[in-house]
Length: 513
Image (tube, rainbow, N blue to C red; front, top):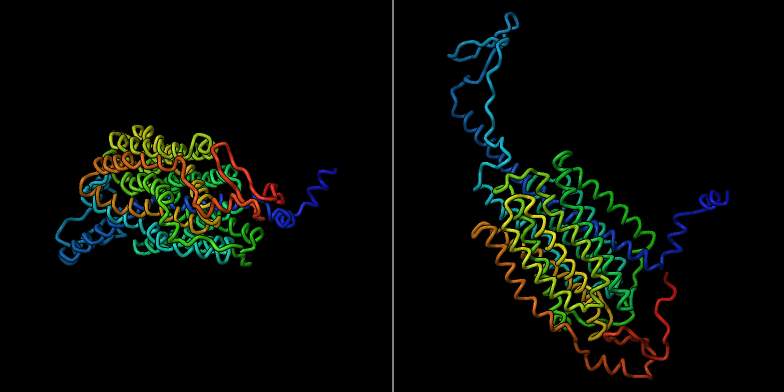
């Protein structure tokens, strides 16, 4: 009976208010926000190429029918049905046909095969789909430099909630858009919402989890939301599109967005402005830091490979493998599963083995995997290279995202909005340049050569991660850390772990769960 009484007395709203300062609840909100963002990012991958191809094919068939109707003699296609003798009399010079006779065998449409008949139209789709996919990352790339400094002034809660509102609008637009222009606007609008969610979310986690090891683990869990979005998106989109329709997957994502928005309202209270207590390093100064640039470049080139595959791999599969609609999304499933595994494992392991080494191995494996993709002859041949690709990208992201916060702590002021704006810019550059360049390259030199080139670029970039092995601290930061009279609680870093300096040696954030 006491359990029933406890259940009756349990109030969800009261519990949320009590747990408002919980780091775990903040982590869960960021997890769901990244899950939603990346599900919307990837759910369109199997839908858009096939949907646009169908739109172009329908427009071409309608144009042909209109032309034939204008060229045909008047009354050539008119017929009269006699209710007296069930005869169909054509209003032309032809003879009558009895409605009781078996109908003539209908002509099969040209595209009755699983293989699309027009290869030239498929090649043209590469460019259109590539530009559409790149629009989100391009807009996000332009907005990020403003979101980072904004979080320093108003806090992380308000931009995070704004990201939810914009993401919800974008999802509804995707559901009901029936033209290329509207889809382009919806994709671009998603870039604004994604910028707010990712920059504010990562910055909030970095400010809440101050210990480097805890932060690495927390960001690894948050990237698990990103990984789950990438994992679920393509197969979810392809199956729903095949058996339910285009609108259904986006309406389900809109429901998920409403859940995350309600959680933010009760927990984070985004109506309150909470600026940072200290002024952060300027965005321009952070962009001049060579170590931050190397870490950002690793994120960019690691993700550019999968970004180039998103618009081009489904079209290449339609052209060479005669793949069905549901297979276009399922092909990305091994990469998504392995990315989820990689981010979870190396969110903890990367700090122990060395983040620089984790990123170096990851980018090298990315290069080898994308080169192997072009050798696949059917969908089963894509399983192993895509699995290796996703696992390697998980290694890169789970090691370089915490590295960005570590570099700010070590070399700059510990305010994280701007540095995670740079990290998101790097991520977006990969997903902006990847689809746009990939679509053009796939049309001009072919999909296999495109994969070979990006693989070689990744392998050549990997050795630069060696410079991240032992990045030096700035002289001003060393002076602060070594000042024993400083009352501010600071942290020093070593390969053995993190320790605190100053009069107060107690761990931070004891009031959090």
